[in-house]
Image (cartoon, rainbow, N blue to C red; front, side, top):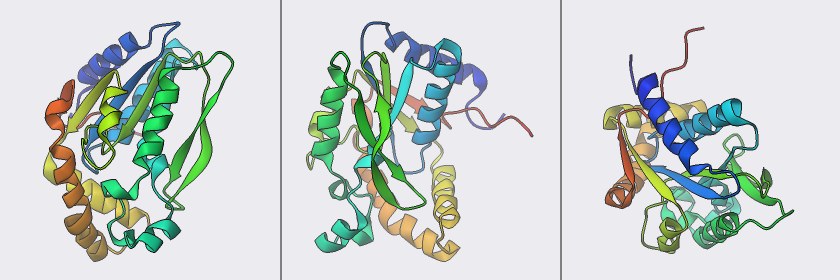
Length: 224
């Protein structure tokens, strides 16, 4: 079986579920380089926890909701390296995590999400009720300790670092860019110039993780 087998996924799922103590609130981070499989693992963890233990068990909040808008990136002269640490609102993301760590009775916190079809963040997309015991968040820079990102690590109860096969990760990235409208050659050039530069920054935070997950972080989809 290619990628992580179902047994290993179940181990990660059990570890996530232990964090979801009723009456409390824990934040689990999934970090890794672009194309590592962060969003796929985080989504499957949350979906499976909700299926097995109830819809109120976990919510997924992505770091990518804090991308600066394209117009602002162009104003700042950073549009050609979208995805770098300074193309996000790091302080805004940290502030949201701080709110999520300390839920107030009766208060729903709304988080933004990134719409890849628009290539823009959309505010108020994800509702986090106060009684949800586990928030899973994923993104490149959860372990980054520079450029305003340093507070993030201390706001997370656990962070897992995904470390898949580099060639498979790069190919996934290229295919993603093609899927969202780039020609293959342009996608390869963007990955080599921008995504891989960001990947080197992400790799520097690997030792700050609670768990390093080698290989693909999820079982393959069932046939059919």
